[in-house]
Length: 256
Image (cartoon, rainbow, N blue to C red; front, top):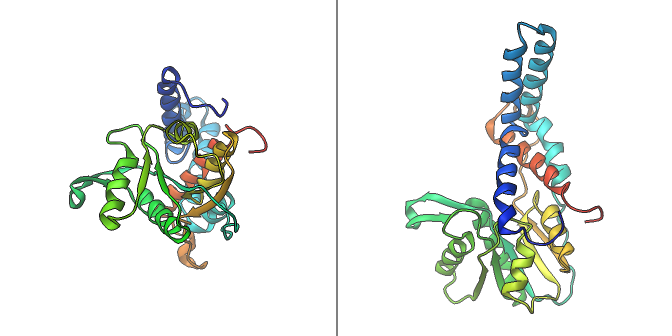
């Protein structure tokens, strides 16, 4: 796979493969699959079944506890550094989903990821007097960028907020931005989650962009205590996201 946008013919298969991979090769789906395999093997291969059950349960426990999840997440997160002092053409903020149960916003609102990313992007754009471009459509209507634009416009009605509402995933975003804004060739400030930044900036650089990274939404870990060894669903979700990012980075050519 190269840096070009995925074609319409291939995107459906790619999206299906990505969804199935996340469901069954990442936690907790992977652990469910291992336990189902244990049940199938219990009569014929009891030792193998017990070994698989042990691996499934121990790894599920580790990935769901802050103590073991912390190094996994922090290895994937892009560290924070001040933005270089130079001239930029725009702040580009990638969306992170819609909230389809948001009656307080009229039915559909920005997800927590989209909202925090784009609030940070708006802050950077205002501080540096740059245009803010919200990028991303997602795979379900309405386009995520339009949802965020509406959300930010209510907070800052006099701000100019541009959108790119065609790209369905991170790989498609750079090419879609250039189609929508062909003059967007200078250095940009890219805003996305800290765990997502390495992969996102790789695709943008592959498309020819000069990228200054502005990561946000770092995962918060409390100081190590007894609670660090107690499992919880939030830590399992963070571990899943870190593993998903690692697998996504494998699609980038070496050097990006």
